Amino acid sequence: MNSMFKDKIITLMGLGGYEKGSGVSAAKFLAPRCKKLIITDVKTKEHLAKNVRALSRYKNIVWHLGGHQEEDFIKTDWVIRNPGVRADNPFLTIAKKHGIPIDNDVTLFLRLRGSAEDSIGVTGTRGKTTTAHLVHAMIAEERPRAWLGGNVGRSPLELFSSSRANISFPLILELSSFLLHNFDSIKQSPHIAALTNLYPDHLNAYSSLQKYFADKKNIYRYQKRGDFLIINDDDALLKKLAPSSKGTELRFSLRRKLRHGCYIEGGTVVFCQEKKEVVCEVSDLKLPGEHNIYNLLAAVCAAKAYGISNAAIRRAVKKFRGVPYRLELVRTVRGVQYINDTTATTPEGAIAGLKSFPAKKIVLITGGNSKGLSLLQFAKEIRARAKAIILLPGNANKDLPKGIAVENMRAAVRIASENAKRGDVVLLSPGLSWLPIMNEFERGDVFTKWVKRL
Image 1 (cartoon, rainbow, N blue to C red):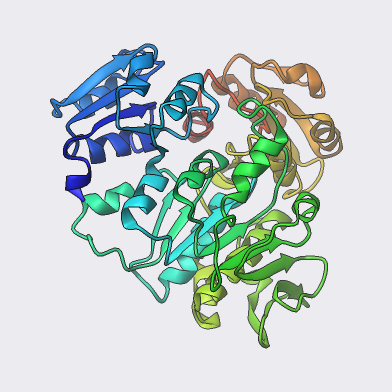
Image 2 (image 1 turned 30 degrees about the vertical axis):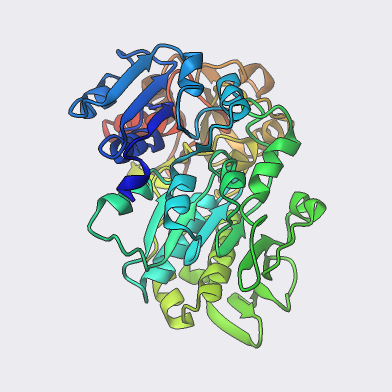
């Protein structure tokens, strides 16, 4: 493998600020293997200081920070794109015009591995992280070496850097549309592909919904006979797009029984393919909200497609306690639950959070910046379900119901606590971005910090 990079000049576009993000992971993988690694980012060295220091031992890195240079996308053998960089970035267009191959860390991994065999990919506008974690938990019951990565903050390139050179174990990959974009370059799709749902999103990063949907389709576009496509049968947009695969199709639904897939019958989760099987009880899942039942059904389909037994699936579901930042119970103070749902960055995600708790028992922390999505339905649900509204700073607040405007998260938590009574829920489920102030994970961490100081 190292010989593939030995004489190569490689451009890494977007180091990023995440210590374990795609950019830093790709840099750590490539720097010891290639002739020269050019790292370019629009952010300055001061903004990226921590990650620059972490890579300081590699003397073959050339740093072009604070902006991009055209020659870095012409006089290079390979461009590795941080998925946070827009796919239509003009510098990537320059690379394409000069025939330079473009990958991200996941497609580079699959290209080097040579196959998407034994891989399970999960995507969707909402629910992909929880579903991917559930799939991993189910498969790991019988295949303990099962590995979870991708958009969960763990790059599969680290597998090549470890002693596990023979990657013959299940790979569960959470795949955002930004990661899926470059799957066109490798003409591969995961062996098992799950689509949790599809809503309009990322209109600040895509010029049209069609381009967003087109990237999502890459999760199944290159499947072949023997592969599996798992689809939410209740999702209107997915039905309109009519996904199809050369492999076997499995569906999941809360509304009807299915001949091939997963559904609910009398409080039990049923999987049906060659025969009808009771897999587990809905009550085995300890996560709130109807959306998490959908996540469970998608995960069961994936685990069954992989050949995992019902007993193993049920054990995993009973033990599963959710994923940080997604309806995460931070603390209960004087009978008030404080819930961190910071990754609800779309209106649909926040609506799902609101519907997970009793109406008029919710003190909602929202506010922030729009991603170009309609907030009409979100505003309607806020009026119907929230007893009090705390608004963080942002340009989208004019389209939300009137609430108590605050300057920072510390004030938001303090005022929320003053408005909550025993039996209430303080819910951070913004439905909006808070960039450029901070990303959703930082926002959730700051919320947790001040809740723990109450």
